[in-house]
Length: 216
Image (cartoon, rainbow, N blue to C red):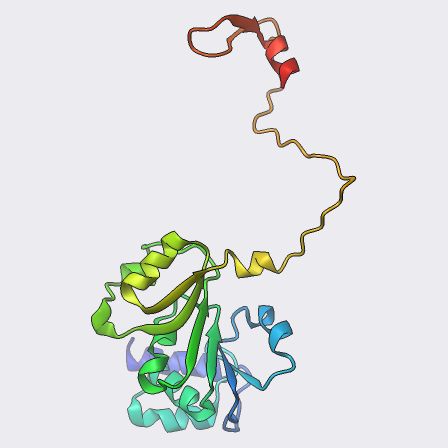
């Protein structure tokens, strides 16, 4: 990214509700406001703070302080995290490499990532060539399943825990003993010849389509 592009990005970011006070110390730091509303119900009674990265809530004092390390989002995030000095860093941005660098400059913090979507190799961190030499680390990564967990463990030092989808798990399951079963129809054809022959299985007898449908 060129210097002009960085300045344009910062201008767009800062024009959206800039913050003029240094962030206060908090025990929990939500790493980016993206989908932070899913975590808020669990954190509302705790000492927590939200780090904004995406074109909103640019903290001007943090920006000025971070310039000694260069004009970059990475320098800004590092300065912000060190100002808050949280005990726990948690995020649903599981594909953000910056999250996995927190322990490099704040090793005392516990870092937890929650997978929020499908992860592949195209345009994802799995396809960016990261290795153990990049020192990406996390205490726990809560993943959809063990297969994607193995991919995370290949490039990130830390433990993966299978929980399924955090967002889907928030939807309550209602069990009604009097409820009726729902049949899902995979194919619907408007015109079907009920007298046409259908082979039940290879090498077995042939029946009419109407009989096959009745048995289902």
